[in-house]
Length: 105
Image 1 (cartoon, helix red, strand yellow):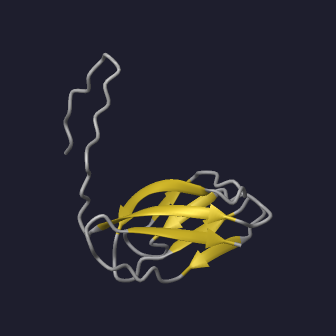
Image 2 (spheres, one colour):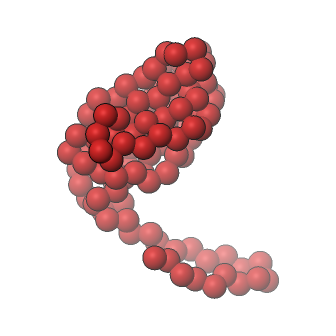
């Protein structure tokens, strides 16, 4: 765990996370005609998560956070209308500080 006491007088502190290869960081760019309203990571597996978040159709990268990395990691996003986007295989390199940027069209 990270434990730092941050200064109160306007100073900045940068801390490298150095996240291990058992996790990955995810960003999504939504270029579609509708916002994404939910996000499944590792869909259909024991490590599945669901985030009730809105990813606007702005074409800008949206940072969603860290997730468990597995050889079969995938991502599924849904819209309020029932449409969905599926990235069935992320092909993670299993390195420290790995990240994935996905684009939905």
